[in-house]
Structures are given as structure tokens and as C-alpha cells.
Length: 419
Image 1 (cartoon, rainbow, N blue to C red):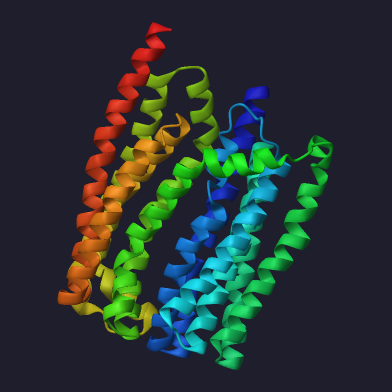
Image 2 (cartoon, rainbow, N blue to C red):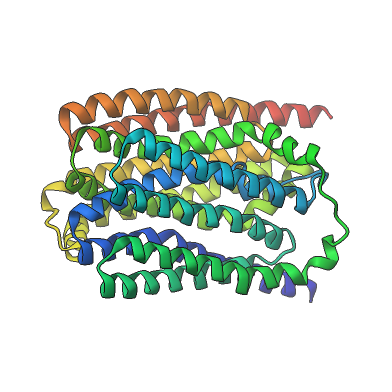
């Protein structure tokens, strides 16, 4: 009976997580479609670079993220410690966003859009700490429900307000209000019901700052990861025009499905990885990771085939912008993201066994490759250079992660066998 209940709980958590995380992850796609159709390709270009900047700022707000919170073995850091830490990082995130806008010298309209998108991601980063608490209390389905409600309301809200006002700034203000209401009306009541479990917790400043210290390399890996994926967009912002930024955003968007698919599969197994590591079942841990990789590769091959056959036709239909000339770019980017998805799985496995510094080295190398490659190639070859730079960087990352993962797990298995 207990096994049946556990299976039902797992399915419930998994299904709601897929629905919620899926819609939340795809809301940028729907937002970009709405902006393109209603506001035009130039506003779509501004929105695209705004999302790219907001995403890298998001890593500052998120800092170590839910992964470290949920896989925290010792539980010496309380939920309140995590909440205070996250509030601090979100404030820092938004202040840095303002600094970037001022340094780049954007006009008031572009600056307003970018800052509102950064605020949107800051609210998401803060809300994620509540999601971590829910997940630790075996309520992952509540996380999925919250994400689904917030994302659905956000898409409808942005569409309706933008259709009425034709003003992207007003529409993004409403989008942020929807996020705030979701936190207050859905997430907070769920957390309030869990108060009995941590109402007597006291936060300690040493723990708050300790999170910043202990998870620094995890944060840097996330920061570098987002930079790597968006380096070409930042280069386009420097060397090209808004319309090209929008087109590159259109052909990049389907590729993110690879990462999202890997996340869908992985998230429900974070606790399982933690348990296997605690029990020193390294072989089983690697086997589970390998099985997930096989599923991701199979999905990736399918995605590449679909992209080659009908990818640009579908995107043209969706955005109303002719993209037939960009088929090879679309296929190349999706193929590159298969490697990125595998690297992401290795990242989770290495993070679970607390091997973060070596990942920092990998990402530092890849950041350098991405920075040099994107600026040189985009400046000289435009969107072709942006695609090539992305492919080269993700290939380098894939190779490095394979080498490091095999080495670290082989070493860990020997240590466990000895003990």
C-alpha cells in the first residue's frame, strides 16, 4: 500500500512539475510571439536582448538556486536563512541591472523594457526559494501548480494589455503585478501552512553569508552558463540592429526545448540522486544519469529531424516573419543544444557530489571561448557568426564535461569501495 501511495505521489509531482515548468519555460516564446505580432520586429529585438540580459541577472538573484537547497544533506542552514539570503541577492540583482542599463547608454524606452524584464526575473528568483521549501516538504506538485497559474495568467495578461494599449512598457508592468499577486495569493498561503515545521527557526547571519561563500562556484557556473548561451545575443546588441536580434531570437527559441526537456526529466530525480550519493551507490547514480541522457539524446535527434523538415516554415507561420533562409542555422543550433543538455545533466550530477570548483574551471574556459568567438564572428559574419560561435562554445563545453565527469566519478567510486 505504501509503495502504491509513493508511486501516486511521484506521478502527481512529476506531472504537475512538467506542466508548470513547461509553460513557465515557454512563456518567453509566447511573449516573443505576442510582441512580434502586436509591436513589430524592432520591439521584438529589444524584448529579445532584454530577456537575455534579464536571464543573466536572474542567476545573480537565484545565486545557488533550488538545486543546492533541495540537495542540502546536512540541513544546517534553515529555510529562513535561505529566504533572507535570496532577498539580498534579488536586491543586488536589480541594482546591477540598473548599472548595466546606464553603462550601455540605452534610450529611455529600451531601458524601461529591460529593467521591467529584470524585475520580472527578480520576482521569479525570490519565488523560487518558496518553491525549494515546497519541494523539500514533498510538495513539488504545488510548485508546478503555482508555475502553471502564474505563467498562464502572465501570457493572457500580456496579450490582452498589449493588444489594448500597443505599449510594451505598460504590458510589462501588468506582467510584474501578476507575478506579485501569484506570490501573495498562492505561494504565501502554501508556505504559511508549513509554518509548524519551521516557525521556531531562527536565521543566522553567518549562515546567510555562508551560503554566498559555499555556493559561490555554483553561482559562477550558472552565471557563466547563461552568458555562454547568450554571448551571441550580447554581441549582436553591440554590432548589429534590432531586427537581426529578433531573428536570432526566433531561431534560438526552439533550441531551448532541449534544456527544458532535460530539466523536466531531472527535477523529480534530484532527491533520488541525493539519496544514492548519501548511500554511496555511485554505480546506480551514474546508471540513472546515463538513462536520462539516452532519453534526452533520442528526443534531440527527433527535434533535429523536425527542425530540418518543417522548422523554419513553422516559425514563419508563428512569428509572421519569413525565415526560410535560416534553416541551416536553426538545425545547427538545435544540434548544439543536444550537447548542452548532456552537459547540464553532468552539471547536476557533479553538483550533487559537490564537485563545483572544477565546473567553474570548465565554465571559465567556455566563457573565454564564447566572448572571443561571439565578438569576432558576429562582427565579421553577422548571424552566421552568431550561430557558429554558439556551436563551437557548446562543443567545447560538452567535451570538457565528459572528461571531467568520467574522472570525478571514477575517483569517487574508488573512494567509496575503499571505505
